Figure 1 (spheres, rainbow, N blue to C red):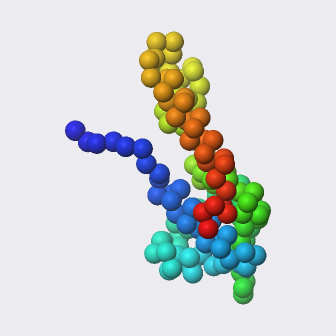
Figure 2 (figure 1 turned 45 degrees about the horizontal axis):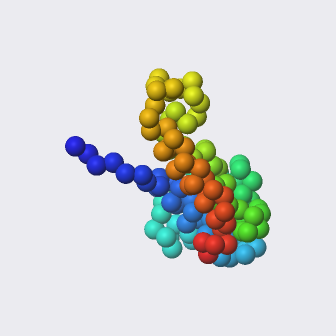
Length: 135
């Protein structure tokens, strides 16, 4: 039997690495190549992540000499929840938290209250944790 556990996806992990790198540089534009080499992450993978973060308005990019990416908001305004949501959507511990209609055991489920309490606590912590707390 395979052991399962809650885990943070590699995409979220790499996204937090990128965001903390940008936050530590202030208003300076940082190249993804530099971050990729420093943190031993694929530059192509960071480009995918940066596209999602840019689309969510968390970072901005500039091309050409001295170009790269930087934060589009102050680090104290960017919560861990915003980063995760930009990269993978809202935090859901179990599929049925999307909608009661998606749960075949709705009304009979004995574990729903546990997942709802855990979700509420996780989301609260992610909303309260700002990028400045991670740098």
